[in-house]
Length: 292
Picture 1 (cartoon, rainbow, N blue to C red):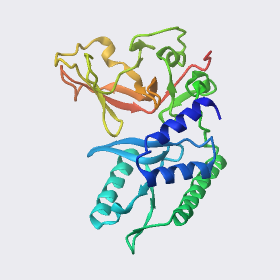
Picture 2: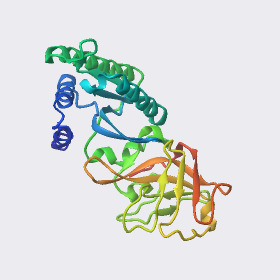
Picture 3: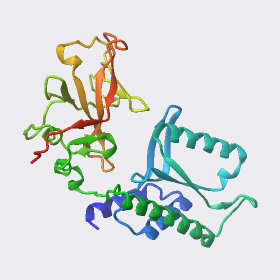
């Protein structure tokens, strides 16, 4: 395992050091799996229409998250809240929960570590079975957590990129390589590709000292573009272009990356002079294969 991934694991576990049962379960799951090809995220943020949520342990390759339920989850009221939350996450992000309770529901007492270990083994076997299934279907992509994860040459044998491929690059010019451009260094946030398309690199979150306040809808199908000062946004001939969107993100190490989230086009019917509405029109885009 590379030092890069070692640092990630240590940093991830440090996020939950004050939650002793969650720390025990998560650490034991990772130890039991002992598989560097399986990606995990501790305290994964998930936004739903009703607010912010953090799931205990998320496995992106399987769209599954583990819920470590301590004793306070045993009440009927809390269980109803948990069920509503899980349903919101499923409907919004299509993530499937797996519940691992560290208490006995009948006696309302915390289980022994031996009993918890048995549940951990059962869950780990479940994750391994999901990996075996995806391998058999040719759909499992090993976890890469180094600079090769962001290399545009990973897509050079493809004819198109898809949102489902989780396409991420480190720099704007690396995204532009997918469309035949050969630049180096920083590029502006907008690049006209052909007479129908442009590549757009928006920051889809509010930040200080920015003249733009853009955001992506919870379902990932609408981008709202507006200025922080409330002034009108000029409409030009390029406004009608389809936008191949690589959204500005921060990865788990706080480094800037650009993630392909689809092809969007401005909706004249829904836009105003002060707020432009861009709708998802495609979740894939052809690329030029000669990426170097």
